[in-house]
Image 1 (cartoon, helix red, strand yellow):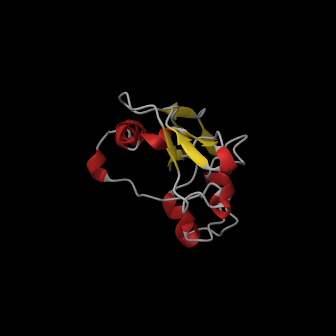
Image 2 (cartoon, helix red, strand yellow; image 1 turned 90 degrees about the vertical axis):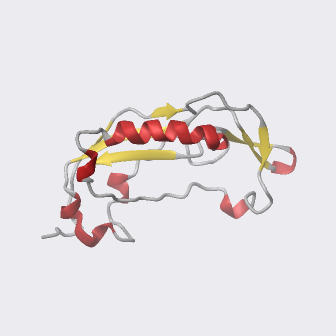
Length: 152
């Protein structure tokens, strides 16, 4: 039986780490398109997805699999491992620096089933489940992506 949205549970997070592309990638500067460079779009967009445990995974560690897959994907999508910089007239550009995306491993003392339909928007557990990166209120110079894998 799902519990109410007043459920409280601890989430233990390991220290954030930077996941870099698995192979060397070009170091270059890429301008954002005018569509992507609108003043009203200069914010991080939080997104939360829930997946049930897949029995076909066997004893594989989902955190390690996701981290390794992310590093491999960043070889092809290497601008995401860079940082936004401002050019002339505040034009945003991506410095493809391969600094990496933030990756956080976490564990929650709750079963996904206990959350029930409360995981549907608006999810009352944003504060508990999403990591708030210190000093990332802006977008310039910050990691472009933060991924947190939380085991339930």
